Length: 275
Image (cartoon, rainbow, N blue to C red; front, side):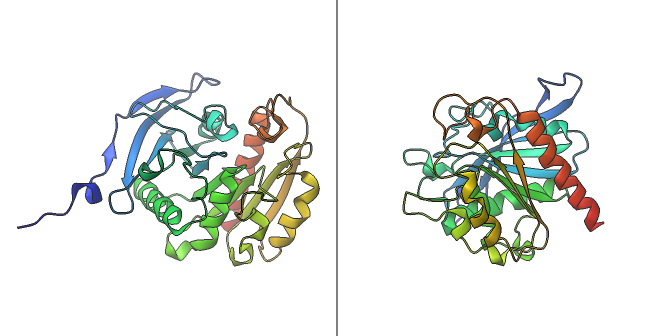
């Protein structure tokens, strides 16, 4: 008699722990680390934060190489300063459940997600995450990417429609508008296939050469077939260090609360329009 491999069927749930928001100590939520089986022998890990009454779930894709090296206790071995990673509790405060995804188990060494973000395997991994999240709560699931994370979020959205387990909406922040690594920039993807709401957020002073605000028409023109879309441009904050890193204007340094609030308001307003 043979048995299916445990690696294909076992869902790992690390301890569910109550937590409190750093900016709003009165807000309690639960946090756990989840390993969802995806492809044969592969699991996709994410940190899952849930307030008491979530209105939607957001899956957050960090930029760079996408290596967060999440421990079983929910500690981040990399990417802690990334805009979406460091702002995750701000989404919880706006009544969103949050899944912060790491690189999958077979991409836990260099080059991590580099060269992987626009592959069928990446789509399969995140499709499994979305299915798991929808089993927890029947609320909309949105993908939010920042910097190179927009290449993940946008590509997955073009490959999976809602009938096939795809997302209910897409948010692109600090999008990759031009590419220098032989991959595709976001405007070069098949965005005309999208049938979901798309919010684009970009800093007018973004100094990263791959994300110049002057290139924004390339992206908005590529989204011309999307019926529900908007560009939110922001200014201000503090720019420090490398213009392509998270503490520059590129990462909304100093204006995280405002940016997250505007994203959250747009998502909830969109759900209201659907009703």
